Image (cartoon, rainbow, N blue to C red):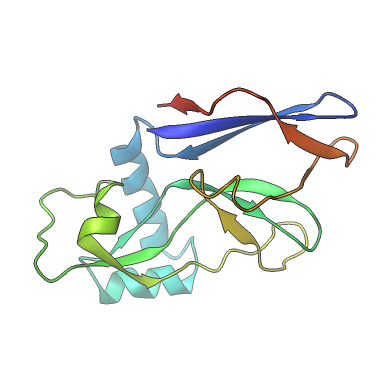
Length: 156
């Protein structure tokens, strides 16, 4: 389950929708991303972590990568790496998203970089999106994007 937010450009009217969290295909998507990580497609850091920690897990939730350097923003996977708490035994081949906080401890945050300029980005979740007071720029005209006045929607 995830949350979505819609933004509209105050100048040209362009709409953007951001989908945070995970969807109904979570188990399949988790396995797909885990396989990519194990063969090195997500970088050496995650690959080494998973090889050295077979009970380790990664958070595949969708988050917003916001570059304060160039203003580019895009949805990416969180990819925070977790180790299970000592008293927790995983009974599935994938961790459930709500288990991370209770049954896992953070091993390392993934270092996301802007796909345009290569600088580090701020990772923003649905829970802290509006607390961050991020200024989103329209990809068409570079004007400020404003949130639509509706409550966040849930998607699956």
